[in-house]
Image 1 (cartoon, rainbow, N blue to C red):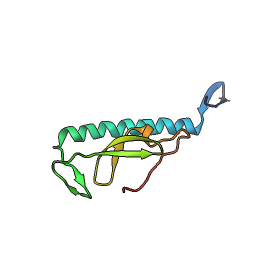
Image 2 (image 1 turned 135 degrees about the vertical axis):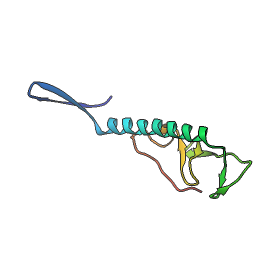
Image 3 (image 1 turned 180 degrees about the vertical axis):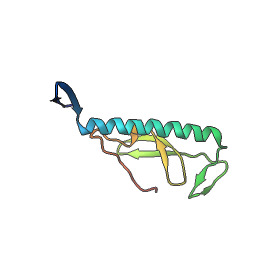
Image 4 (image 1 turned 90 degrees about the vertical axis):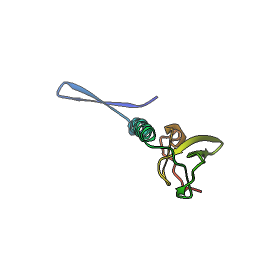
Length: 102
């Protein structure tokens, strides 16, 4: 449950949600925006897989993301950027997990 803090200014009641809840909203919105942009880019360009920063025709641009005991899939946006679902990189405390490509 999220804490809500209320203030009354000149008879107008305003509610402020916690920073954690705002961050989740922003993270989800960013994930949806990235997915929409990615879908547009993918639909308008021919498929071209990348391995080690160079084109690798015949291979796919799908990656596996390991996060502890769970895993998710992702798609290469560029040779160094992977697009994936928000729940794959945002933990229960609202923190974003990042890491180097290996």
